[in-house]
Image (cartoon, rainbow, N blue to C red; front, top):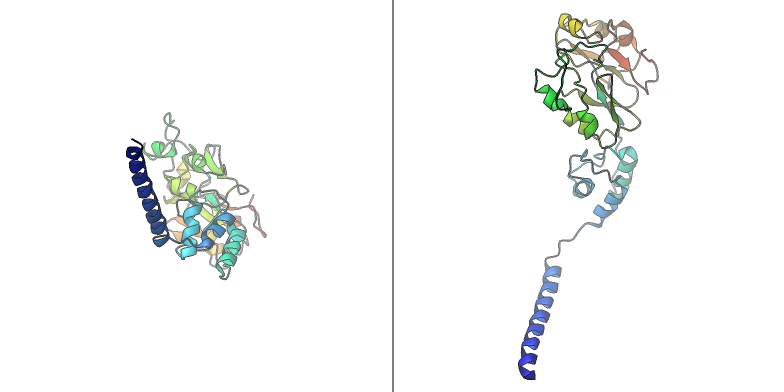
Length: 272
């Protein structure tokens, strides 16, 4: 009776030992070695997991940057300080990174811009945009229902007088709002020294005037006034090249609708 019990137990134990040895050998034989630099990079990342780097999260970015599939400047939340730490870990030269911030290229507030109709539906810009381009008379303007604000993981966007506004102090330039906006009017611009044509309308001047008090009417006065040729026309819309702009403020002085603005950080001129 005892033998009948011992034999099966011995067989099972022997098989268990055999399988254990086999699994141990297989785990070492087929072990996927992980570069220790991945964990080091992961430790210096801010852990926001916002996907602003283009990867699924901080873990994905850490692996990609070690493999050379992502730039060391790829983390918008961490900025220059994190980039320099990553460069030190990887033993490469640190790259210069210009700080950026999101900017809603529209100033069509409820006071400035007319409305086509009163919207009473889902509080979502994508949904409202499906109905004749939204309630704003300007089809290029901010809808103002806060889809970008809800998507921002850093609470850096508020809705003020019908238009989304970005709070520089909280914005990390992750770019999520840029991807979320159905009007495609949010841009990442230099955080310091920036003059901006705060309009996205491609309509002709007469139509812009009918719809909005502060839209760009394509008069080209700013183009002629700029001493360094930093402003060009995209159809009827003036666009400032921040690489060339010296922030002299001459463009803002001659703009008849005050569509050109200077934001916090500009050293030489502030448009009121």
